[in-house]
Length: 252
Image 1 (tube, rainbow, N blue to C red):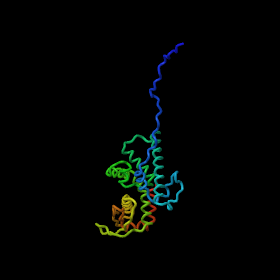
Image 2 (cartoon, one colour):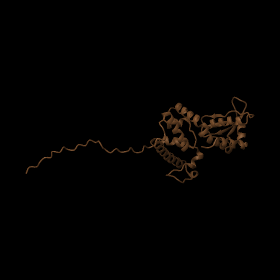
Image 3 (spheres, one colour):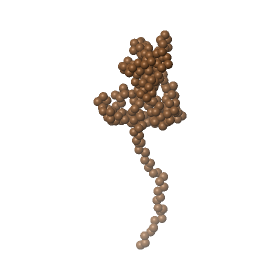
Image 4 (cartoon, rainbow, N blue to C red):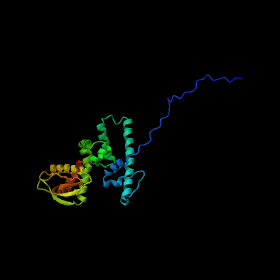
């Protein structure tokens, strides 16, 4: 008996319902992670535990192991913050904003959750946000102008007091333009100078009889700050004024 041919059409794969694989996680570039690590204040290394390294005595780590420890922390935090940002948008809790506003918002969460309220220098921000140094400086300027009194200055004020009261100056030097003598301190970031200038303005408002010269960046290459010895004396001896400033500028 002859075999009857099927009259049904041959199935055609239209690829209309092909499964789409989710992209795998992108690896962070080592220089980006290192830039984030570079901007963490050394005094905060003990807080940088991660799921990979939950209990570590930072003081016992070699320089190489310390960098690995900090990179693990940064990589974990960046991933968690990316998920946090996505959930805010998908839940409608973070409204549509301009790219500029988004950059400022991201800088804020980096400052709060990775850098412990430390604002990195312009070169680091330029690399992280893929900006020119000039645009990075403008971004930092906008951020500081918006959050100086509520985010940046309260912590910078306390770190400045800790620096002056727990660290010996490297030397004394005269101001190049006015008759004033000051102390030279090594600082972790040039932005400490801005905090010191704000503090001098606050001291002047509380103690108008004192004559103080504004601090300045004494050495741009090695980050040395010149600060008037009158200001240093107030910071070391006037405990009531320190507590008043702490009450005025509460930690967020």
